[in-house]
Every structure is written in structure tokens, then in C-alpha cells.
Image 1 (tube, rainbow over the protein chains, first blue to last red):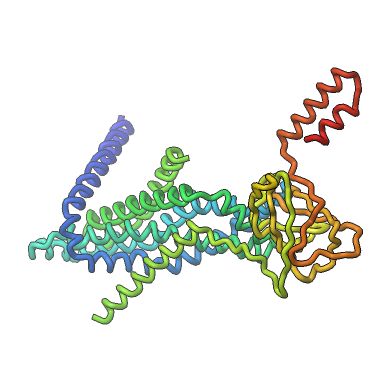
Image 2 (cartoon, chains in turn cyan, blue):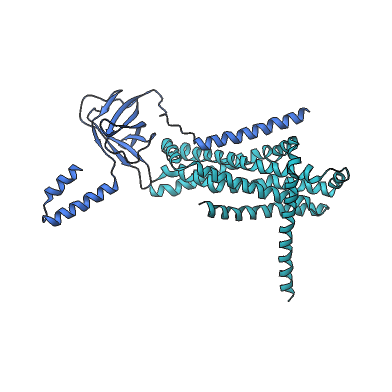
Amino acid sequence: MSLLQEIFENLRNFVATIGAVALFFARTVTQLPRALARPGLIVDQIHNAGALSLVIIMTCGLFVGGVLGLQGYDLLQRFGSEDALGTAAALALIKELGPVVTALLFAGRAGTALASEIGLMRATDQLSAMEMMAVDPIRRVVVPRFIGGLIALPLLTIIFIAIGIFGVQVVGVQLLGVDSASFWSQMRAAVEVSDVMEGIIKGCVFGFACSLVAVYEGYTAVPTAEGVGRATTRTVVISAVLVLIFNYMLTAVML
Amino acid sequence: MRSNRAVEVSTGLFVLLGFAALFFLVTQITNRELSTNGGSYGVQAQFENIGTLKVGAAVSMAGVTIGRVQSIRFDQSVYKAVVDMRISSQFDRIPVDSDASIMTAGLLGGQYIGITAGGSDEYLKDGSRIEFVQDALVLENLINQLVASFNRRSDTEGDNQGSKSEETKQ
């Protein structure tokens, strides 16, 4: 009886949260034109979310590419088709690994920063202070961060993929001796612009999800130290789950 | 003011890097030039059918890569595919009567040109043409020949000569 009640309660909370996020997003959209009038704020946030995540993205891309090279080579050489390494690794990176791993890293690096920053603003009453000065915190704080993440993640995804392919090439061609021309020419023959577009679309959707979750969690954080910490944790967890679910759906639609 | 400027510069660099990576992906940097330290020479061969041979594919002798396919085009006057290869200059003693055949590497691998040495004392040099060629095997043609030879056999009770001549015609 109490278990049933609990389940019902949780379900109700879940639906209420989705509604709250939707309303929050609607408020964000209505403030969009006025926020765009101050592009400097958005540039700052692209810098925070994108440029500052660059090192971690590039390092991880290199190593993910490298391990793809090792594993791909080991698997393909059993069939005597090491030459297909470029194709296999490039498609894996462009369609799946690039967007997903970048989004997970982004949630960990930039999403948490956004959530804790906005959460701390809430906890230290900075958001209330803005409201008192008739500055809408959604317009001044939330929208630039949301847009910044939305722009940064697809770019980071592309960079991750490019570095990853470089990593595959380093391991496959330089270390393991796959034929360089076959590697590139087969990759070129198999990878189409539509595949790259698929990766970019995924990057955009993940950017939307991760940024929205981060700013929402930060904005609605309980204004205590514990609340901000919890908001940060929830940002990573919810972003990761959403990214993986969206990834499955997008793949199913676009395959 | 200066720090603001620095933010703009690094953001700009980040965006540019993103687009550069996109350009890389879309054009898929292909380093098709044969890395020929010490030069190379061009050799040509004409094939009836090149299968799925691609520019950049290996040219090999005895399994060792000695060059690359530089270009592939279709010659309308003879209805043949003309394949230009560049062979590294260190391999300068390939007999002129060598034969070039299009082979497949592995189960899923790409196709490459295999050169088998002939017996002549003259060697291939820049601009030479390999006269003896063997086309890529096209699975459908093989099956058609097989079916035709079976049909012929059942018609004329083991007349091998008939099916042989049909194969050579193909």
C-alpha cells in the first residue's frame, strides 16, 4: 500500500519535473531575442563551455581513437582486412563515439561548472539581487549559458572526431603498419557527408539536452551548500542518461 | 578590457578550430601522393575491367608495395580503363614484359595491382606501358561463365572444347 503510494508519488514528481523543465525552457525561449542583443555574454559562455573544455576533449579524443585503432586492428586482421580499419574506426567515431563521449565529457566538465555556478548565484542571492534591479536572471544568466553550451558541444564533437581519426591513424598506420593509402582511400570511399551530418545533429541534440539540464538544475538548486552539490551531481547523472537514451533514439531514426 | 579581448581571441580560435576540424572531416584529408623519397617513375596499363580499384591503391610485386595507383581514367577510343601508376625509383629493374593483374587483398580488403616479373632484359622506365594485363574478377561474370559451361556440358555431353572457347571469348 505504502509502496504503491510511493511509486505514485515518484511518478507524479517525475511528470511535474518534466513540466517544470518545459516551462523553464519556454521562459528561456521568450528571453532569447533580448539575450541575443548582448552577444558578448554569449561569447564569454562559449569560451567557458567550449574553449576551456578543449584540452580534455582533445586528449580524450586522441586516446579513444588510439584504442579504436588497437582493437579495430586486432579484430580486422583476423579476417585479413586491416585495410578496413580506417573505415570502421571513422564511422564508429563519427556516428557514435564522437558525439556520445564528447557529450559525457561535456556534462562532466562544462555542465557541472554551469550548474554549480548558477546554483551558487542562487545560494548567495545574486539571482534575487538581479531581480531587484529589474534584470531578468533568465535573460542575463541562463540564456547566454544555454546558448553557449548549445554552440560549443557540436564544435567540440567535431574536434573530438577529427582528433580521434588522427589517433586511429597514429596507432593503425604508424605503429601497426596498416597501409596508409588504403586506410585513407577506403575511409574516403565509405564515409559520406551525410554521416558527418549525423554526428553533428547528434552533437546539437546532446548540446541542447546537456545545457538545458545544467542551467535548469543550477537555477532550481536548493540554496544551500548541500543543495548546490546535489544539483551538480544530478546534472551529470541526468545528462549522461539523457544522452544515452537520445543517442539510441537518434540512431534508430537516422540509420 | 584586455582580459575580455583574450576571451574573445580564445573563443575565436576555438570556433575556428571547430570549423577546421569540420573541413577535415568533410574533405577527409587524403594523402594520396606516394611518399617517394628519392623519386618515382610513371607506368601505364590498360584494363578491360578494373573492378573496384581506387586511386591510391598499392602496386606490389611479390607482396611488397613498390608503388601507388596515381590516376584512373576511361579511354573512350579503346573502351578500356587506363591506370597510371607511380613506382618508386629504387625498383628500376622490372622487365618490360612483366604482367599486371588486379587482385583483392583479403576478404573485405581493397583491390591492388600485383606485378609479376617477366623475363626480358629491358626494364620499365618512365612512361612505359605494361602490355600484359589481367582484369579484375567480376563475380557475376564468373558465375555466368560457370552456368554457361554447365549448360554446354549437359547439351553436348562433356564437350570441354566448346565451353573453353566461350570462356576465352568472355
